[in-house]
Image (cartoon, rainbow, N blue to C red; front, side, top):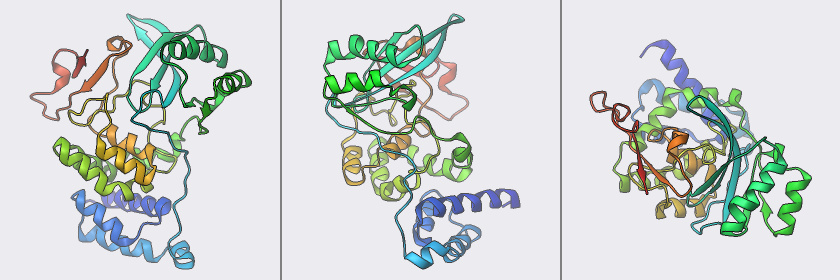
Length: 302
């Protein structure tokens, strides 16, 4: 293995231990499942763990929770997220608010004149509450949690979920781009649908801790047009195994990132309509790549 690649993998292992205080055995286990357990990486696992002063002084402390959790429920309208985004249709710029149910991935989308708390409140009432009723939980970027939004939440007895608006991209560069993490995701996505969800459950205790850092993608990926399908599992239903894993670990952010890993693409905005479910087809073969067919790899399920 080239020295540069080995150095990057060592950095990834250090990141794993830095944010999770994982034991050497756990780090070796995840490397083995990802197909990367080699002598060159097995030895640093022991060295990194043995050199950790925190583990030596406290035993094995809990991981640092740098991000808050997202409420997920199988019940519709239990938890709702909202976010603004910009879409271009035929070279025309539109500012859009996307309101989406976190559990069912059903969303309502509407254009706005500006991105502020007042527009968010107006659209939340007209596009969601008047149609589906008030949700139990609601979350939005912290820059929109102004008094006008808090007043709306109190009047409808909605519980606001407190969370950071964005994850720091600077802190997440190594995690997002490192080949080691990509190979872990690849090992999950190459399984059959049933085996894949079971594999996620088996790894959940470790991976949920790993991805509780302020890294990878935004917590509002759903609102920004991503689909949570997993190799053919429709996005309108959360697999039972995933729900059970969530109940055991309450690691919703990690669940969402795992569901989006490898087999998801950004959904073209002009294909999305209220009530439309999207099944993302993914194929790594260059000869039969989905981008070369029809809707660029996206199949619309009415």
